[in-house]
Image 1 (cartoon, rainbow, N blue to C red):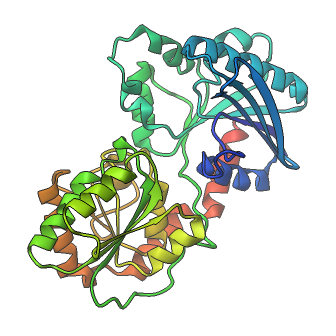
Image 2: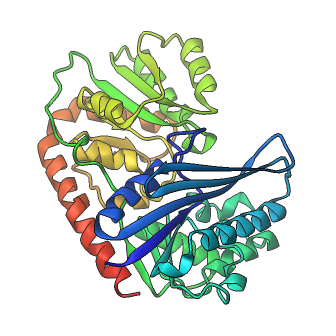
Length: 375
């Protein structure tokens, strides 16, 4: 059995127990089939110039943090690399057969330098949509050259979708020859088909970390238009984030308080409970590299309405998902109406069985084991 050290910049921690939760789910599965440990190596914003903290999460999970009030991204990259090297030496890196990095930047920004010092095989797992958006910078920004360099060193890469692999290749300008498409892990013990809900009016559910990129306002405009046509419904919104206040203001301004409920931050079991009672799950983001929550909904057999996202089409079809024609209020209204009129066409049990077969633990384990033993 290979001995692997997993290294991540994003992981559940004392300040946010949901940060990078999908990486923890991956690690929990990987450690079943390999001798694995994980370290969370991160430079975080702090009030002081420099502060170091270490936490032991479990027998094989640790967090190493530098807190700093320095704003310079270059200095933070250097601090991340120095902290990483210190952790590798502390963990006696030579005992490991493989270093598995979850999300390449900023952990591997200086890999081209230190790989000559630490000569152990490296692989990358990627989840990040930032490559699709060019890190929200102009394409020829020199600042991005260091990130692009990571993917020019022939490092084997695991991505959650073909769409993400394409994003990385277009971003870096480099064809990736050693890769594996491996979906995010979905907890089959929580997300599974339970029942067909018997709601008097259609119940819709959505949950997210509501940032601007999640683009919720067109979705809400669609519900406003339904209300104007005297179509009854209930929308339940879970989650938190910078857009929540704007969403609540929209609801109040348009007198939708009786039709739209906010239920706050939710854990996996709570999300599953709401899904089981909902007729349809809604996803408003214009782009995703995979979307765990859509996969969770489909694992439970819950149909989905979302924008036309390539990564979703890799595992879902029109028998499961209604893809928006355009991501605006009118298109949302049309798709919501279509679902209300045709919801009996969606066979929840069949949806669940098809998705479960694709995302089963056994298949993900098998693919991962085969990939790492080729390295």
